[in-house]
Amino acid sequence: MTTAEHNGPERRDDDMVAAEYVLGVLPADERAAAARRIATEPDFARLVDAWEAQFAPMADAFEPAEPPASVKQALDARLFAAPAKPADRPGLWSSLALWRGLTVAALLALAAYVGLTYTSLQQPGDAQRFVASLAHDDTDVRYLVIYDGTRRDVALSHVAGERPAGRDFELWAIEGDAPPVSLGVIPAGSSVHLALDENLGKAIDRGAVFAITTEPLGGSPSGAPTGPVVAAGDLREI
Amino acid sequence: MQPSGCRSIAARYVCCETETHASTAITAFFPTTSVHTMTPDEITRLIFRTALKERAAFDLLYRHTSAKLFGVCLRILQDRTEAEEALQEVYVKLWTKADRFAASELSPISWLVAVARNHAIDRLRARKKPAKELDEAYDVADPAPDPETLAVAGGERRRIDACLDELDADRAMAVRGAYLNGDSYADLAARFNVPLNTMRTWLRRSLLSLRECLER
Image (cartoon, rainbow over all chains, first blue to last red; front, top):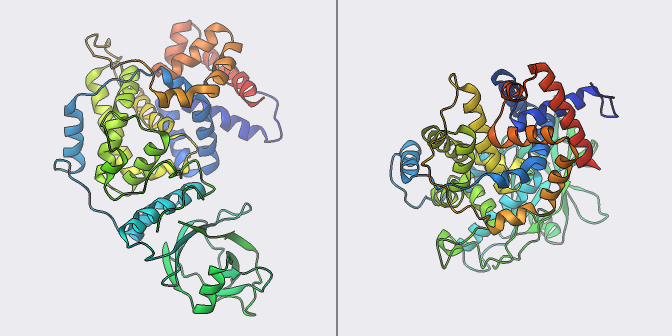
């Protein structure tokens, strides 16, 4: 087709399929195949996203047209089987379970938004919440941390990346040049809570960062990290 | 505690400086009028809230974006009844899959348009019969671009347009036609009176040129 560049011919070809998908020219079967790849192959999905962004300015040419009210009524009937009314506020953690697989930026945004909303429900000065997105360029491991400074509670939401077989993830707090302090092995699950003792809480208040390493099952035998850091991040107030 | 504003590196998504507070009453976002033009940040927020299954946010999202998305469905499907069905399905999708937005790098309006456009094209490809003529009686809303659209356009628009202009006129037309009308390779081959495979080779070459131009 064309000269292969450093990305290799396969990726170049994928990029063309992505462009054809976004442009919309593919026949039904090839289009369905591309849609399946978007759902299952993050690299391919990124190519599609990049083409969507490139072509997006052309969408200005779509003239807005007011749909008839019957569409919204049918939509409401279909989704809610009732007329519109203010929604109940969902629980924070049950909602977060929906958010697995998101980008780090979006997670921070969500956390900031949820944090703001929930803060607004409380009395001023009632709670001090911080959020950290733990990530690393070399891995796909992503965790979202929400730290409640008042209750010394760390809530961890697993976003992406599996632990290697036969290994555990261990969470560490690192303050300045001091040796990392273990917060323990991260239990499996999409969202888990860890309680901090007062010393750790104070270290975090002073600006300690979080890091996750892979360790032998049950955690580091020495009390110090032995495996590579797979995700890290510092807290931001929300 | 008052929020401290845009402290996140995700400033594209999180921008609270201009808003007084993340109020629990969504109407507080739009204190004066229902014809308020939404900023991309406000639409982002509505998409997030929709993902959290907040019905009020979903209703507002519909109110502020359905005209644009209906325009997309109408243009591609060229059939009013089918466009109405498609629009309904698009918003069902948005209600159930709004969380996908967060994984995208697109602006909120571009993402919504992509969802609607892809759905309309899926419907078009699934059709057995050719499209009916567009119902000429359909009423089009004010075609003047709103400030949000203009803001999104800017330099990006010039870039894609400049790159399309570097292609031969008929190839640029094929690319634009495919994007805006949902033309398939088969449609384009018929229009340009060339075999299907020729059309595909031809368009792929155009896409390669386009990419080369967009990357430099």
